[in-house]
Length: 185
Image: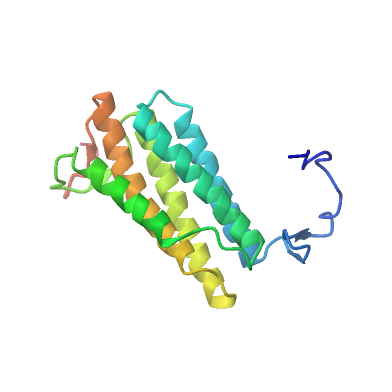
């Protein structure tokens, strides 16, 4: 493969537009670009979690997800390109179920926190929810694969479970929400 990015700045976006992979120029504040940006932000947060001291299986899972998110961004940049499949969603569900069997059932709501990787995972989960909302908004304006919001919905569930899994692996308890807690307690 040759060099794809020999020059980083092009100045072609100085007027508030950017090019999709098929060459079509769109406004930088379009819903498509906003959705791609949320997915890119999510992918960056997953990279931050991967830079932490986490177990090999979690790292491999996150690495695979990062590749799927990059593919998803490509799919959004090339509207006729399809990269996600139902198998991509099924894979997330399998990972989610496998991790969840390692955890105690939840009796209470939990707050984001615990170990740094788990807390970062919760931040990624919230960004994933935003990316999903952005994808749904885009789907109301333009045709996109229905698998994109589905994948993001399942991924946010996986990130919640992964945060709990990472807390358990580090010996940190989940931070439980205390219903009816009084101020300064």
